[in-house]
Structures are given as C-alpha cells and as structure tokens.
Image (cartoon, rainbow, N blue to C red):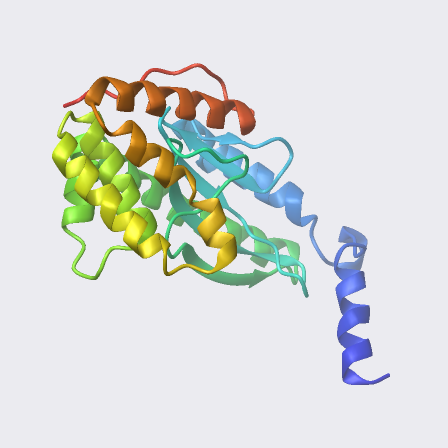
Length: 235
C-alpha cells in the first residue's frame, strides 16, 4: 500500500474506531467535559455538534472543538461572531486557533486533554465577555489594535459607532471597509455585500438602527437562535 492509499485508509478508519479498540468516543468525551466546565457559564451546545455558543444577543462567543480530517481527536477554536451581519452560518472572527491538536489515543489522556481545552475555552470566553461587554468596549477594542484593521474590523467598528449614535464615525469606518472590499477576491467580495447596505442605512441614526435590528434578528433566525432580541444599549 502506497503512502496516499495508507492515508486515505487511515482517514476512513477515524470514524469507525470504537472504544473497544482503545480509542475513546471523541464526541461523547467532549460533550461530557464541556457540559461540566462550560455549561455553568450559560454556554450551550449547538445541537449535537462539537460547537458551544455563548449567546449575548448581538454577538456570540463560539467554542469549537474542531476535528481533524486525518485522525480522531480535537483542536480548539474560540472566537467572537457579531450578529449584525446577514449570514446563515457560524463565522469565527479573526485568527481563532486557541490550542493545537490533541489525539484520542486513549480514554484517560484524551479526557485530560479535553478538560484542559475546556478550561482554556472558559478563560477565553471570560476575556471576550469583558472585551465586548458594551458597544463602547467594541470601539475601544478596535481602536486599540496596533496593526491595520481588516475589512470586517472596520465594518464592526462602524456598526458599533452607528449604534452609539456617532454617525460620522460610523460612515467613515464603513467607507474604510468598502475600500478594502474592492481588494477582495470574488467569494469574500460577494459575502461582504451587506456592508453596502449598512453604509446606505447609515445616512441617519434612526434608519441605521432599524436596519441593524432587522438584520440582527434575521441572522439569529437563520442560525436557529432564540429571537427576537433588542439592540444593545448605547452606553
């Protein structure tokens, strides 16, 4: 058997190996540990997936125990997602890998590795909750980034400014996002078309708040999250 055939064979075996062969039930271990460590924070599992959501109405903290395509085990990703963009799937904002791959070689060591990952996720969610506790905190976060902001960064900053009633700053940030949008490849260019709608709505505060609330609840519905919610307080 050549190398390519061996890799494909191993990949097929990942989903079929059972606890009887010394490999733990990966999803079951993750679910049990996450329920013990994350659920007390109010974090909820998305269906029967390996993703857990910290729902704050207008943004999510996403914890993903990401599988590997080649072996049983898990990576850990923890990032925020702002819900004021029209979208029907979860998106982790920015660089999201919090911890590397932990193989499910045996039940004891894998459970310990997942316990460590869940503890890291808990700590990171605590940081995110403080970082995005209010709209003003969102603006402080993006203004404090030392490197150049991305297209999405500008759009989220602009949205926060708009909901704070600072419409000139809102329009300036959205304009910066649209400049960067013109440099994107076709897929991301199409996916970011909502920024054009946001900029048009930013003509005045009332229109912008209405557009944002409508978009927010449409996104929550598409993601099958409880809705409706209200806009965050301008504080």
